[in-house]
Image (tube, rainbow, N blue to C red; front, side):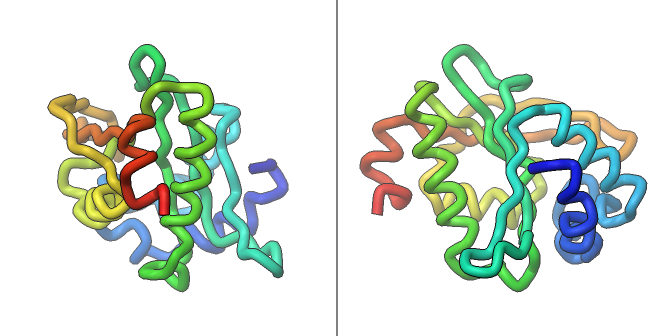
Length: 163
């Protein structure tokens, strides 16, 4: 992701329905999304997701180590245009990201709002295992309970992402 991707990413993120189940339901608003975009840029691990063939930006995801344990990396902050929901995009992005991350780390984690059923189902669909770990994360002015899913090398090799 690059600073010049702001306009295209905000155009995708400005759809309130993308954030309807997310703990930060107001992220579609420009000032709120600007903060999120700036955080992603500072992380150094943010990616713009583009449509194959056209290069159109259709979402974003990122790698981060701040909440990860030893020999782990977190993948998250993923959002996609609604036109990509239900199709192969999220699966493909996660297969590429998890496969890349497991070359350098033992485990990939996903920290998801406990009530964010859409994201929880998406991670379960790609083989994420619910762990016992929970985190309280400050979001939209409140502490929000988050669950942690994990995928390690064995999960990756034998799970849905290997196909």
